[in-house]
Image (cartoon, rainbow, N blue to C red; front, side, top):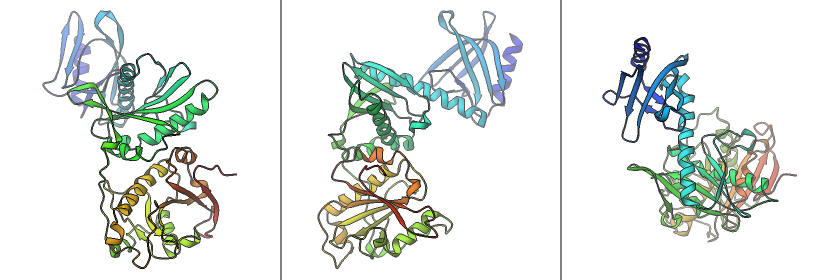
Length: 416
């Protein structure tokens, strides 16, 4: 056992970011002063702790060794056996075990949340398995809740802000998948999203613009720093403030610099040159870019603002490659344009000075190569509120050489 102890201590001291990973628990970093290796009862004992958890395990043997990772046979309280991984989180080889452990930990917390918030319901299909065919990410634990013939889809979100901002996309995909799969057995009523504490504002803003006749939406925040099993319901109506401003018209008329080799930059050039070539109702000019300045930096999608000949605003979103987040990110821009339009900000900042603007909500145009619309695009659009008038405009494959519109679909209609 003395040799095993020396091996473990030597491995840990050689790691830049040593951590313990046990299935069902979040990774626990080995910080100086917050862990201890000892010999007790003929076994190596590891004790480690932080502000959220404490772990004590007897180590029986090293089961497997690979770069940056030791898999250990351990003994828990009650003589139960299991495995524990000692990893260097700074090494690429340790990234996937750490991710897997974090996913399992979130899945366990998600299961406890569902049991508390849905008493009397059967929790089925609680999973973090990837399903690439249906665009279901392993990072988001998901479940099906059943009571009689009623059912809800449920999905939990990892802690980082990007994952939280993508949760509605994956939630709607999961809801629609279950709706079709269970259509002859269950009535799927709604979608429950469990979001990280302090990172739910964007989802709440988007929630206003989903169709309540298509699904109910229940939002919860989780993980108060003082209690990981804490949660509270969220009311989207209390999250109405937008982090946005309107740029002066003269500034928004100028194209932003983009590296010339980017397909999106070329597509933007085509649309700015004559938006009426893509939709005959649009005025050839002017076209404005990045009108409401969104917080958060580059989104990978180009946002333009134009108007129809009758004075109705049109939000144009451009994407040259498949992106399953396109509809939801387009919604972000649309709801901000609508908000500023209702407040009279465009006239006040010099936009379309010779045109009387129609007070109706803006149109939303999604323009991309026809084969590059992600298969989930129409799925997500199916749950948009009727007030959002969406048109998908698909371009020919060789659009950079021969710019032709090959597809025009309204709302969530499926291509023939």
